Each structure stands twice: as structure tokens, then as C-alpha cells.
Image (cartoon, rainbow, N blue to C red; front, side, top):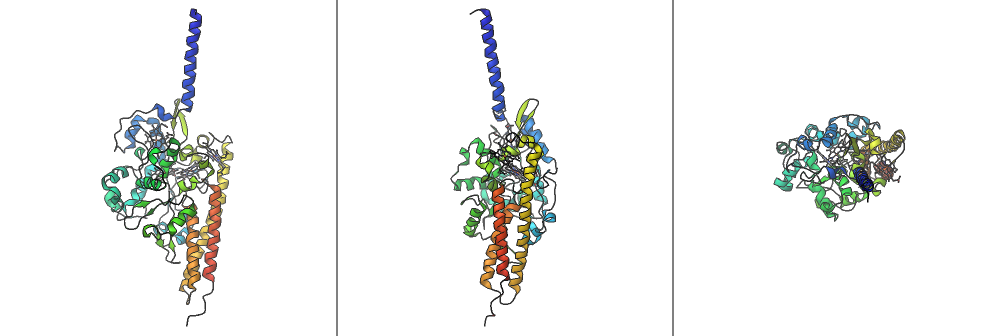
Length: 426
Ligand code: HEC
Ligand code: HEC
Ligand code: HEC
Ligand code: HEC
């Protein structure tokens, strides 16, 4: 080989390596390049983590911004939902959501908002902090589930930081992890060992820890995720029908005297049956898209409405124009909102009709029992949509289907309530 051939060979080899490195950097997950860490377990201050991971921390700080979403439904501007849906005041009569029902905002506010909401007091069960702070990790380690029954006021003293890096990451290697014991136990009951989950699964599990329906077990007030029969709202309803450990419902409605269920933000369950989930698309794909800054690729930690950055969130997979994608989302949400509002309003009328029938002399007991059962289920379906935060986008077809059922059940409840009472008993 002459010198020239060697030189060309060397240049060729260098070029091939450079090309491989460039291609790898495009396809590689960013975490492979940043796995250095001296953050101790128990460090919950995001600023300390931020010294090692400035790009992720910089985007995480954007969670403090409060801005509306172009869809009119999402966004992080505080407002009371009952202004837009006065039916909330009737449907949640006798329980805390009729007093205070604010729009959600960014993760750094979770602990502050917990302290500020009129729904709880310092005497409320400690279980309420499960999804509000990374300090859950230490509290659960030292107290086990007994924290769930401890008055919240006592736990506040142990909590300084809101939801932070430690809720989703192991500090020693930055692997994704789940720390909420309720999530780990619910998955175990479904036969899923979360420590063996794939990276793709973890990109949704970290969110599913908190963005889910739950209830408090009677006596212990332990947090339970009701997934034993499946994620579909009908399966969850069946689960509740069996009164697990004596749990009959969240509260008794003062007008209709129906034992009601309160649905809580079932984003994970709604997503679970969606086209996107079936195609393997995780919460993080839309809510934590890849970004580039100074030539570096990283995962955005600004966890907010994806419609604030449609290009990064959607156009990676959907080549359509931003405006077209926004219109798709808005159309779905508008259709869902229309039926949701209709269902909620009919349910409010049903509570009133049953309340009136109960007060009438010689009420038809059998019909009223039927009315109450139909109303309980109607409200569960309605609330499964109303309490979910995407206004149906996460799973449009399932959402419209359960709203249709809700409307039918609410009509049936009213019909039963309006059936004339039988002849007076002798
Ligand atoms: C295919 C993309 C996509 C996936 C996957 C996805 N979301 Fe969303 N999400 C959206 C869109 C779009 C909205 C509506 C935002 C709006 O109206 O501005 C939304 C709204 C939300 C909201 C309310 C945001 C707000 O501004 O108030 C939350 C919370 C949420 N999603 C959580 C989740 C969780 C948890 C998962 C996984 C279980 C998930 N999302 C999966 C696209 C997605
Ligand atoms: C709500 C969950 C959640 C929180 C809170 C969170 N992360 Fe992440 N983080 C993720 C997800 C999801 C990924 C993507 C991981 C993957 O795909 O392997 C990620 C990836 C990373 C990576 C790998 C490199 C990259 O950009 O993909 C680093 C480093 C990181 N996060 C740092 C942080 C820091 C620092 C904080 C706190 C300031 C934090 N994270 C808070 C969920 C979270
Ligand atoms: C430790 C519990 C917890 C985890 C983990 C968590 N969230 Fe949240 N999330 C919350 C709470 C609580 C709020 C509402 C905070 C408030 O309003 O004060 C919230 C709010 C949000 C919002 C609304 C933000 C806005 O701008 O309105 C979105 C979107 C969201 N979460 C998506 C996600 C996604 C996606 C993941 C996973 C990558 C995730 N969350 C992980 C508890 C959690
Ligand atoms: C990682 C890839 C990926 C991302 C990110 C993604 N999608 Fe999709 N989306 C898909 C796939 C795959 C389907 C299934 C149908 C298909 O092949 O087109 C789909 C289906 C859809 C549908 C039709 C089905 C339905 O549920 O209504 C809409 C609308 C949609 N996406 C909008 C969005 C929007 C808006 C975003 C951003 C917030 C987004 N998608 C983000 C891959 C993605």
C-alpha cells in the first residue's frame, strides 16, 4: 500500500466513524450520554439536580409559567370550573368539589395548591400528599402506609419540595422509576412487576403514578387504584359495585340520597385504551418531546399542554401543518365538551327530580332505587370525562361512547323518579 492509499483509508475510516457518531446521536436516547451523577438518594431540591442536568432543569423551570392553551380547554391559568359548568355545584353537592374546583397547573405548584385548596384542612388524611411531593419517598420509607391516616398538617412539616426529579428518576443512574406505593401495588395485583418494565412502558408509568383514578380504603385511608378488572370506566365501575373492603362510595348526595363515586383525573386509564397507546405512544412522547439546544438533544421537562409546542410534540409523527393538528384537537374537544355539558346538566336535573320524588308522600321505592343506581352510573361516566384533563383528546371514541351512555342513564333516572308514586299504602 502506498502512502496515498493509507491516507485515503484513514480518512475513509474517520468519516465512517464520524457518520456513525452523528447518526447515533440522532437516534440515541439522550440519557445514554448524560449518565453521570453524584446526587444522593433523598435530595429533593430540583436546583441541586439542575447543576448536573442544566438543560433538563432549564425546561423544568418553565413549569412555573402560567399560560393558556390555544385549545381553550387545557392550559395552566387558574379558574374555577364551576363558572363554565354550573352543574358541578349540584352534582357535587355535599362534597368538597362543590366548594373548590380549580384548573390544574404545573408540577412545581402541586404542594402549594394542596395547601391552598378549600377542599382539605390540616386534619385531612395524609393520603392527600401522595401525588404532591417527592418527600413521599422518605415519609413512606419511615412510616409505611400509616402516613395515609396521619393528619396532613403533621406531614406538611416534613415537606419542602413539590413534585421534583426524584419522583421519576433514580438519582444514581437517572433511570426512570416509580415511587408511589399505590401504583406499584395496583400493578402487582395486575401481575405487572414495574421493576421489569421496558423503557417505553416507563415513559407512561412515571405519569400513571399520579394521573389516575383512586379511592381511599375505608379505615386505613390507604390510596388504592381500582384497576383489578381493567382500565375501562365500565370495568372500574364493576370493581366499585363489589364494595371492596366495604368501600361503598365517596359520599351520599344530599338531594338524591344516591351513594356517589368521585372520579379523579383518569388520564392514564383513558390513554390506556386509545389509538395512541395501542400504537405504543407514551405520555412522554407528547408531553415531554425532544428538544435541541446548542446542538444538544434533550427531553423537554416542561410538562404542559402539548399544544404549546405542536411542532415538537406532534409533528415528529404527523407531518401535517400545525394549524391542521390544532384544528383536529379542537374539533374533538368541542364535540366532547358539548356532550359532557349536556350529560352533566341532565344529571343535575336527575338529582333534583329524585330529591323531589323522595320528599313526595308514598314515593315509589323500587323505581327510586332504580333511579339512584342509574344516576350513580350516569355521573360516574360523566365525571370520568369531566375530571379527565384532555377534554376527550386522549381517547375520543371511548369518551364519546361513555358520554352517550351517561346521557341515556340520566334520562332513565329521571323517568323513574317522575313515575307517579303508587297508590297510598293502607
Ligand atoms: C398523542 C399525544 C398525547 C399523549 C400520548 C398523551 N397526551 Fe395528555 N394531552 C394531549 C393533548 C393534545 C392535550 C390537550 C391539551 C389542551 O387542551 O391544551 C392533553 C392534555 C393533558 C393534560 C391536561 C393539560 C392541561 O393543560 O391542563 C394532562 C394532565 C395530560 N394530558 C396528561 C397525560 C398523561 C398522564 C398521559 C399518559 C397517560 C398523556 N397525557 C398522554 C396529548 C397527549
Ligand atoms: C414526571 C417525571 C419526570 C420528572 C419529575 C423529571 N423527569 Fe427527567 N425524564 C423523564 C422522562 C420521561 C425522561 C425520558 C427518559 C427516557 O426516555 O429514557 C427523562 C429524561 C431525563 C434525563 C435523560 C436525558 C434526556 O434529556 O432525556 C435527564 C438527565 C433528566 N431527565 C433529568 C431530570 C431532572 C434534573 C429533573 C428535575 C429537575 C427531572 N429529570 C425531572 C421524566 C421526569
Ligand atoms: C407525583 C405525582 C405526579 C407525577 C409523577 C406526574 N404528575 Fe402531572 N400533575 C400532578 C399534579 C398534582 C398536577 C396538578 C398540579 C397543580 O395544579 O397544582 C399535575 C399537572 C400536570 C399537567 C398540567 C400542567 C399545566 O400546565 O396545566 C400536565 C400536562 C401533567 N401533569 C402531565 C404529566 C405527565 C405527562 C407526567 C409524566 C411524564 C406527569 N404529569 C407526572 C401530579 C403528577
Ligand atoms: C410518536 C408518534 C406520535 C406522536 C408524538 C403523536 N401521534 Fe398522533 N398518532 C400516531 C399514530 C401511530 C396514530 C395511529 C393512526 C395512524 O397511524 O395515523 C395516531 C393517531 C392520531 C389521531 C387519530 C386518532 C385519534 O385518536 O383521534 C389524531 C387526531 C392524532 N394522532 C393527533 C395527534 C396530536 C395532536 C399529537 C400531538 C399532541 C400527536 N398525535 C402525537 C402517532 C403519533
